[in-house]
Image 1 (cartoon, rainbow, N blue to C red):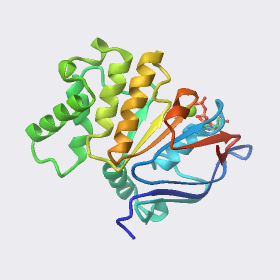
Image 2 (tube, rainbow, N blue to C red):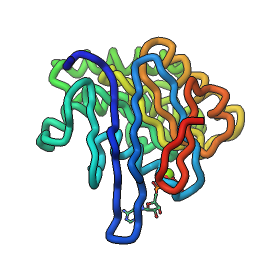
Image 3 (cartoon, protein in one colour):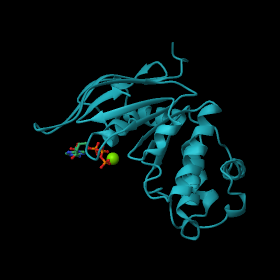
Length: 225
Ligand SMILES: Nc1ncnc2c1ncn2[C@@H]1O[C@H](COP(=O)(O)OP(=O)(O)OP(=O)(O)O)[C@@H](O)[C@H]1O
Ligand SMILES: [Mg+2]
């Protein structure tokens, strides 16, 4: 079973203190090639859901199973390894290092991956990924010299650094104009057709047009449709 690629959440709840139930009995599965979108109002629990799915936060109760491993009993190191090999993250505010060139930002996650044994190997892959997201002309630019849409494409290239099975994107078009919204969703969709499982949480109605499966989060409850 260990090689079956999937992320499964079983009966996840997340409580903050004794009053806030951010997630209420959420179950969910995503497989490679799928593009799943979760819509929901501010405060409905979308980011909490994505953080728990991405092993960046832990649930109060319930299980997160990634590629067949129940992550409940894993050490911090083992969780970090799963994150590195299996998951790519994309955030609303890009989270690029302003002091690094575009391709250097893309190299960053490779430094913790023992499969890369030389800097030139990392550089080569980073530049290929920059090409892949259509930014070959901008490879050596700094984030401050790139438009928002270009910065997000660099962040998507970075999410691909260690060839993850899944991409988790939290409001990836939140800081973009409508033309760039489309180019970012087009790119994420393309990656899903090439084999990545892509999970997007968003307010953006445009996301619905890309979803294979659409969900709505309301008060911590996830429903299909
Ligand atoms: N660290 C925390 N401590 C206490 N409450 C929190 C914490 N993080 C989130 N919450 C609460 O959990 C609920 C869900 O928050 P979450 O950030 O997941 O919402 P969201 O759907 O991502 O909202 P937005 O669309 O504004 O990003 C909200 O009521 C929020 O106030
Ligand atoms: Mg959020």
